Image (cartoon, rainbow, N blue to C red; front, side, top):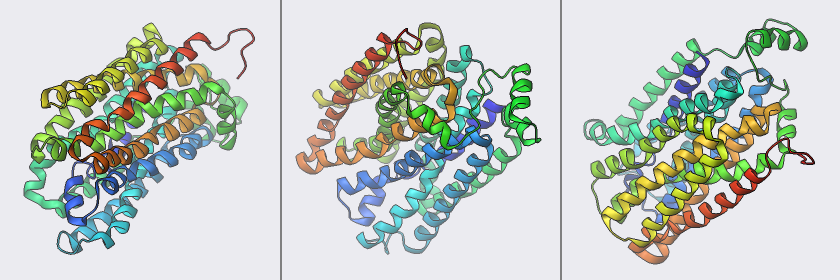
Length: 422
């Protein structure tokens, strides 16, 4: 039940932010903003989602994942309430550039839903032994990541009947219902249940291990962050996740705009290409990539994944054609799915003494790519015009090369090697 509840909760949280990206061109025209500002708007939820992952991921090591999950989902609900209210009151005629800060504010609050990821990672990890971490986290993250793809796919049909304001109200109702369901089904790992019953840490550890729990949390909040921060491998994984998951989030938010304004497609076609060709494909590859990471090693799967990211980015930059971009998008999706599947397999391997703390750092700072990359891609558009939509993918060429070099460094220095230090 721990895996099911965490996956469901992350799916609900990701759903809370999934509307802003596919509706980006609608916001752009209504607000009258530049491509760079649009990049900041669609990426704004990722900023909150990134920064909040650090303390909330570490909070799990202190008292389990259920409470931080519910706090984050509640903040996201506040953001959805605000977005619904301003859309009902002002969209489209009352919107202007002066409305932009208010839209940004509620978009940022919605981003708390994305931060549930770093809570669900340790919540899931503590239920499973080391040898099954890749499998469990692949299922958790892969299925949870399908939220934006599903939303993007069905959005054009719902939008036609409900309109912008109506669709936000409907999404608000769905997220509230999902939060209630999560609260009813979520269960923390045995150690946290024992501690909640008032048992000492020593007795809780003993009984948790007898029940089969292999990874034992540090039991500290700040301590979990400090322990993980002392490991250089923790920061290597942060960089890898910046490319894989941060890059995934960035393209999830940017591709609908790329297909609509860069390729001139309608909303429905852009939604289908983004959802099927990238978001859902990357998510399912991630879900299935956990087992190969368990079998062949996370580092090897990461090398394969980042190599594909490099190839996909080259296609997007060089082809300047519709079908070349479709192929490039698919290759990028497979590469990022494999990269994401491998990185969190390595968290429990490299920082087993503070999985929650490491998950906070990796999930938080790594996901910051989802905020940092879209404005850069928007800058290419503002600088080079329509060709900038393709040229912006050159940023992924640089990121892929850096990720490959870091992965090779990790593989050359496995944990536990004599003389190796944290």
